[in-house]
Image (cartoon, rainbow, N blue to C red; front, side, top):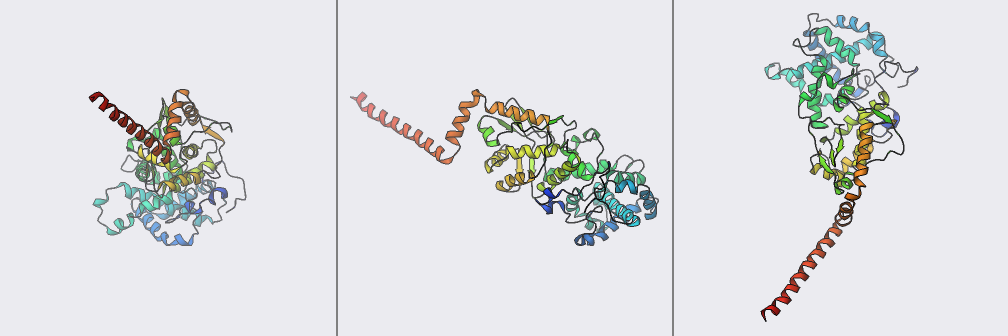
Length: 412
């Protein structure tokens, strides 16, 4: 895939840069269903075309228009705008391109509508059978290359439901609960869907991968400062913990809201599954292409890579409730290191810069020096623990022996 012209200002869907792709290519490739033009010719996914057509048919049945041609004409008016959203020149004829966009959009919208409805009242066994793979499909729907522009989904949805689904729900309203439910199991603990409303999304989402990114960010992302090489980075979790830093998991914070105040490091609870790397990797790739000066999730990955240097760091985070992992500790540390490979940092989250500075000052504060040295030197390795215990035991036995030898003198 190679572009023959400069990127349009409206471009928002990119091919993953080769430097990132070569680290783990499979994490950028759909396994179940293709969306949009980049993977449309993937022969392995062709069998899903009938599934998408069935969902489109169900979607069209919801409308009074019930006409494929009506939506084709509607999309033809936006065809050039849609094409400009892709970083590659799409070598498809107009009719083929517009049909692909409509089939994929109808599939996504109907899938989300079906997910939001009470399926216990649906008697059609075909509907129930086709709903089962939604969580496999969700993974594919967030891949950075496997996207439709968000305005396409919103426009078609609005054409069908001018007043909103059930006269109140926008397409974004349907999307958020699905993503929150999925992310709660595979990325980070979200205690309440009430954490998300329109203020959570202060800007227009470009596509579903961008919605995932927005769910990870605070409502008012902090300012950024230019990255400089002399920026002091944090110590590892085990070093900080041994120096007296307390760890806290705050359930009401977004994934990237890592804070340090008065000796307490607050890290929202991350859930690590075999899908976590894929989710984060695609958001990072999108940020590298589209938000080079606002890469907040990339900042988070870099921060975790500094905090988690070993199995011991993972175990401490798990013990303190900051991490819930379905992988072994070695795999978690390796995953974070791989996520950071070939990532370009142009600027840095100002809150994180302050956090690094605060952790450095706390760690090197003379008031914590004795405790830090004692813990690191005497309790950091098993043989030192054993030798310390033996020394205490020997002292105790010597004391008993001395007392025992003195008692007879008093008896005389």
